[in-house]
Image 1 (cartoon, helix red, strand yellow):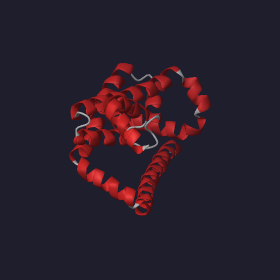
Image 2: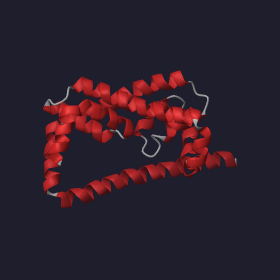
Image 3: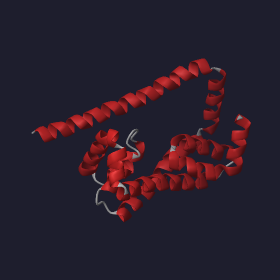
Image 4: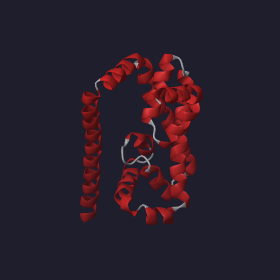
Length: 197
C-alpha cells in the first residue's frame, strides 16, 4: 500500500499536491518538499502549485461566506465563537489577518468565511490571499526541500520505533491544540472585557 501511494505521488504529484493544498495543507507541502529534494518533483513548480491550491481553498471559503450567510448561520452555529474571534481579529488587525490566518489552527477556514460575510473587497482579499498562499507554500516546502534526507531518516526511524514516535507525535499535536485553545479563550475574554466596559 505504501509503495502504491508513493507511486501515485511520483506519477500525479502536482495534481495530488494541488488538491491536498485545497483541503489541508502542511503535510502535503512537506511531502512535496521531500519529493523535490529527491528529484521526483521540481522545487519552484511545487511551491507554485501548492500556493495555487491554498489560494483556491481560501477563495472557496470566502465565497461560501459571501453568498451563503444564512446557511452559515444555520449550519455553523456551533462555530459562532470562532466567527466572533475572526471578526474581532479582522477589525483589530485589518488585512494582515488574511495573511496570517493560514498559521492559525482552528480558524483557517473560519476566517475566510467570516471575511466573506462582511463587505470586505473580494478583489483585495484575492490579491492578499494569493501572495499569502505563495509565501506559506515557500515557507513550508523550502525546509523540507533542504532537509529532505534528514526528514526521510527520521521517518524511517519513526517507522521502526513507532512505540516512541506515536506518544511524541501525540504530545506535540496536543500541545498545538492546547495553545490555540488558550489563545481562543484569551481573545474571547478580551472581547467580553471590551463590551462590558
